[in-house]
Length: 414
Image (tube, rainbow, N blue to C red; front, side, top):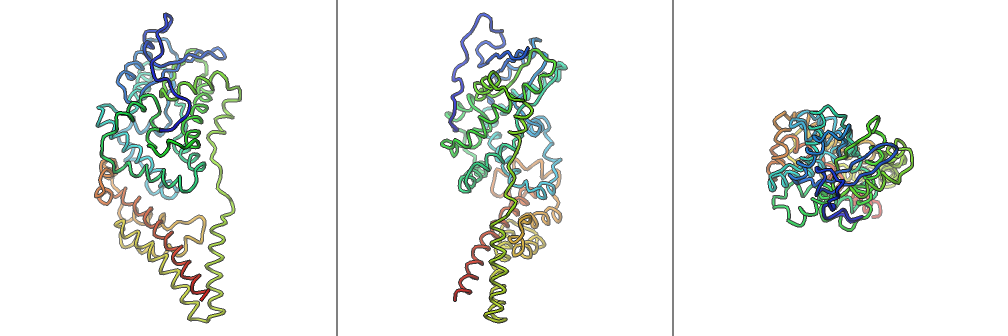
């Protein structure tokens, strides 16, 4: 698990002034700028936490409720058919296929927990939202968008670490063994998003900073920003965030809106795509050199090396993914060209063709979380097959770039 400031491992000791609904529950109380914040630390897989949340809200002592959720996670737990409304073509066009796959990995991990423990992870957060609405209380979502958290974490990791993290998330899609007792106990004291990364994250301070510490600061800023006219605010958060959130809520003095904007920002990629420019110069320069020094035969051979290796392996990846013949053709045509353009990807093109030819149905989206639990299900479900198409076509093209480039270099040096 991620390492950082240790969350409270035992419920706080009873205090004569502690309200009954907080007795035995990890909590912290912070007063700032005339607002009384009650931070209720919960376990995301505990029925006792669900009961504590309901009792706190039903006590009538709070005029506002804040919850450790963002819009996407709220929609996922409150709208069972939200997946069916997803625009898969838009996901591909906006380059969010990797994020979509990561979310599937998180959903698979949560499903394993739900089946094993008999309670949906995050049930206490859902209960907080439901109870707040039932009592007509203002309800604020204070967590950062999970997509931004993923992107900021990715930017702080090296390419190998990103590959291991992505592989771990994808592996969770196929895992069917029970979650270990130790992992469950840590989860009761930690954070669901943190736990989902698995043991890979145990020694990674950069990941801890993004997934836990930054979100503590973010949620503290959101609490200050959204308190409005409320004077008694209940914040329902995972126990792993309790200490950090309370500390930032007491000590942070910067403008909360500015701080939130800073933590919401994602550094833009370098505007100068050096690798693409160098690759383009090498490929086109190699063609020109071959035609000039070796004549038509050498120049043609170099072009064939590039087209057949990149196009052939890109098309092979698409075929392994079960792509439609038109998708395979699209992969073959686009793979030699897309590596030379920073805004294009062969996997995106073949995936878009696949989604257009074999349009995923509502039933495919609804069955997605079940189908991705098995290897066969990935090829049976049209949504996951589009994702496979994207990843395997991109992988085939990448291998083709290095293989075709090496063959070109050998021919030029010969």
